[in-house]
Image 1 (cartoon, one colour):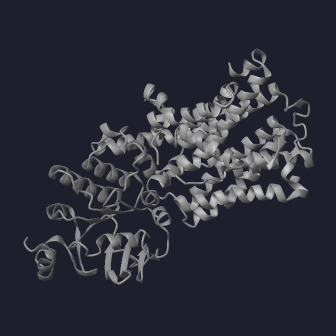
Image 2: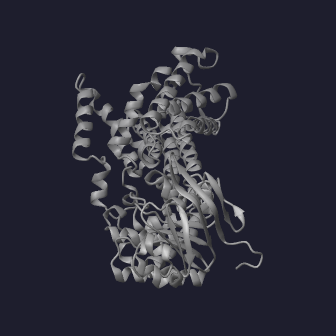
Image 3: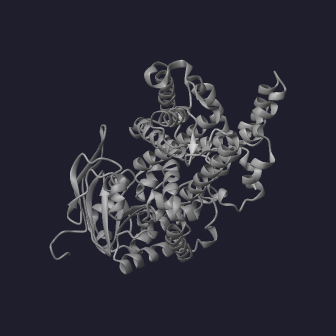
Length: 258
Length: 305
């Protein structure tokens, strides 16, 4: 899709080995900017592990991951994040000791620039920068409908509210690739569709690439541009929602109906 | 108000207040590692001692003004703290890190005792008269009180700024959930080094103040009992709490002096006090303030690791 034939994110034949277990076994995936790419598959298919490999949380045992044509294999998680790749976690990715507001501020960490010395001794410089971030955090919270939670400690939130906060924290950064690991688990159906709409809008308006792990198939079909199906760590199909729905192998392995 | 005290109260009370201010600095530095960074680092007394020794040695050999010696001592301590950080950087955590850092503290004590050409051995040495601006004798209670007050005020003010900045948030985030912190671009390793460096600077500065108010440095002053004392300040005040360090540092440095009039019962009173606090206020004395003024900044950072 790109003029010079490099893809935005390209996972080539990636493998991850945990002792005896080959959690990801030669999976391939291509994601472009502005596209919502869903990653589906049975439990234990290696979807989250593939995310962890992209973000540098687990080491690849084979294959390559190219971001804008450059390999990002071997970079630590914070270096990968600094390239503008943001993720959510399947379980407990929030900072429990902090408020929602602070979680959002931490989400903007990469874009806040001042030195330690300024932080300690130049309140006027820091104050201006921080105030802008406070406003952005408030905007983000109200656009996702969680403005009322802003100053509550995360430890007091319900499961669904935590999900929303985590999504907000991933979206608030100036990212260019978002990896969302089951963002809608525990949310009520209208909220799911709301989230999906928000994600597709975001992908189009900010030209962000989104990879989405999701089991809620109606949500995936409603918003994803492309779907990749993993099974036993391997890519078994990639295509548009309608192609995937009619793929015999996918129906046998995962969908069963549709 | 606090600055007018020198003309109102006796030199003895000023001495106690100066010591309390110094311990506020100690507890703040210690709390940064224990509470905010969530690392079981028990090298605090080693930092304290390095600060005291290097400040007095700079005074002695370079004939430097007190403030220069204090700053130099704090910088040296900061560097040493960043070296102590190495095991933590390699991923050693919890009790393992605790024992390594305890061992570092004992190693420093060994150095104070046996590196006699420099430290003058187990007997220690008298600190040369520290001068501020070349004329003011900083060993005088009034002078050192005001100096300490100003230094502690500036350092605490900047510490509160630090906590509310991206760096403070990064350190707390790395404690709460290192994976999440990394996923938003917090380089947890360099933040750990930063926490050690700043903690070392604060505790080292406190050590420099110690050398001026006590006037003598001896290895025995930097042993395990002093470590327990400082640990108590952090816990009694409130782990991971800015105000807690202030309250704990003052409480546990003033209380022993208050009860010293009851020989034989003093330690008992202090122990019962600590027990009472931990039983009824497990989050430290700071709970009294946070309950009364829940809307303060403090509330944001009150949670323990």
